[in-house]
Structures are given as structure tokens and as C-alpha cells.
Amino acid sequence: VVEDEALVARDIQSRLKSLGYEVVALAHNPHQAVEKAAEHHPDLLLCDINLKGERDGVDVANEITADLDIPVVFLTAYSDPGTIDKAKSASPYGYILKPVENPDLQIGIDLALHKFHVEHELRETRQLLATAMVDTAEASVTLALGLVGVMALFLGLMRVVQQAGLMQQVARAIAPLTRRLFPGVPEDHPAMSAMIMNVSCNFLGLGNRSEE
Image (cartoon, rainbow, N blue to C red; front, top):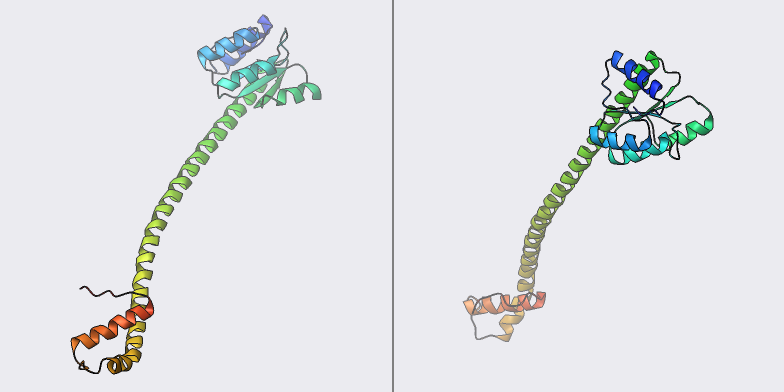
């Protein structure tokens, strides 16, 4: 609880205890507020907006929440637009108008804590979803790379099959010419077959694949 009026601070502390809350520290100025927040790590900061001195409650709340992820509820005796607009910069989870009454305290704090926990759970859910999406994307890339390799092999086999069929057609077309060029080689001789296949491969740009 951050309140520069000692009597008001003790009254708020007493009311909070009667409602079942534990007040871990009272601070009467910005310096105390920052030190005690860093020391106790409270679940919620209940802070008066109008503090004496150069720094007000909004400045204190911004400094504390820069280091601690905790909800802020402002106390104020003023509800004018200027005060409310300034308080918005600290993204508070609620406002409680002075003079403070128990029902206002309980409702304001309970709603602030509930909203804070819901938002915290949503952030964790988003992080889990983001992590899951990254993992899924990495798995998809790995699978895709594997499929690319399989597809490359499949396409290579298809090309061989297609070229094999085309080569047979070319061989049948070239065979008569080859027999005329080499009349001394019998048609059923292995050398004739080898020459026909060699010419067919060269025609298709495959080169001679036969081993010497």
C-alpha cells in the first residue's frame, strides 16, 4: 500500500486485513514504495495517485511495474478527466475513490487480481501456441525436405523409364541403318546390338552407359 497520509494508510491496512488480505508493507513516499516492492514482491500494488513531492503515484507505479509483473489499483480522491487520463499511462487494473469503503476495496482488488490472472494465463497460452506453431513448422520443413528427396528419386526413375521407352523406339528406327553400315556383322550378333544401343544413347544425349 502506497499512501503518504499515515492515518489513511493505517486505516486502509486495517480494512484490508479485515477482508482477509495480507498487507506486506506500507510506503509513505515514492522511494519507500520502490524499495519495499522490490523487497516483498507483492501480488498487487495499491497506490495513491496524489503523493507529496515531485513524483506522484503514477510515476511510482510505472517504475515498479517496469521490474515487477503485478497489477496496479489506484487510490484517488479525484475523478476528474485529467487525473484519470494521467493514471491510464500506468495501465492500472482499477480505481478506488476515497474515502475508502470495504466493499469498494474488496470489489476493486478482487476484480483486479482476477483480470490479471486471466491475462497472465492468456499470455502463457499464446506463448505455448507460438512455440507449438514453430515446432510444427520445423517438423513440416523437415518432412517437406524428405518428400523433396523422395520426389526427386521418383522423378529420376520416371525419367529413366521414359527415356528407356524412347530409347527402344530410337533403337528400332536406327537398327536398319546400322545393319546397312555394317553388313559384315550378323543381325543377331551381340556386337550389332551393342552398336545399335550405343548410337541410340548418343542420339538421346545419354552417352554410352555400357562398361568396357
